[in-house]
Image (tube, rainbow, N blue to C red; front, side, top):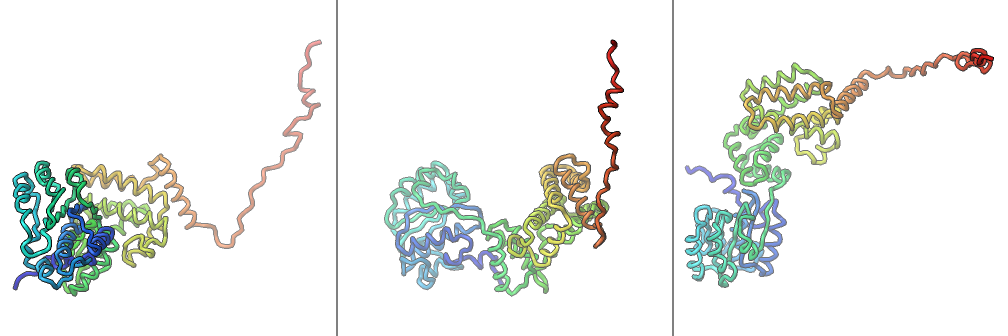
Length: 428
């Protein structure tokens, strides 16, 4: 039995309506297709895995659909079936990888073949992927063809670095910039895919998968595919995701944050020892700690951040964040985040990351050694929290201020006569 296709290939969109997070691109393209106002050349740019090549294929399908002009390919005609997901492809839609075919000889060969009419479609479409890899001489060889193509020819350039496409080519294309996909939208999409695959996934694992994908749909689906392949009967758990992706478990972050809030140095350095003994990367732990402190800073400023969706966290973790932020002062949280961020920068290229991690923890634990304004405010925060915990007994009257003892006017201010008697008279 053949292994199934990779997840990002099985669920590759076939219409613009299925492309997520790129409505600013897909809606104008659908309008141009529906109104039969398609340009002869397009430039799709943006980060990797955000839908550039997929959208180029959808655009080619819509151009050659038998029902054209149409906003979305019908999926029923011969051209649409040939260019569908898993289809054999079309001889009139040519995909070129410019990384290996970007020289001037390749451009001349393309220019010679481009003038031949399409075999059985309405347009001959060239999709040039990684267009920034085309040499300057190659672009110059294509310039006249891109500027004044025959009526049957369409170009779609896809690139992650549009600034490397020479200006004379860029000026002759319609440029559509793609963006990274928002985390919340990706989380919803992943949940739907897991339902289709029949595999359960813990809510706490979704942010880890989205974080590993870094806004790229293809990278995120590759990570999810790996987790689905290694999931057991219980599905994709948070422990599986954090262990396989190398992230710090939430329990360890909770432990170190609670120790910082209590000023318990033994517990803090005990967590550092666990990080090293379990083989985790100190840099990754420091980065995860900084993310947790960032979440706590937001929760301290906006207590309902988890409920309103400002923070994408599970319900049980949201309760822990609110409780942890309550045990810190805002200034102390901000100071701790600044120290960890500065330490993370120092860790780049460091030969002893454990030593730097321990020094970061020592600085966070000792606001008394910090003579800056943040250190003073952190100490005041601690004093205020202790006063709030100790407090005065309920109902006990506050004693009135002690009055200063009355001083006789005569003792405080000598009279004029006394002063006159004490003043020596000049000799007569």
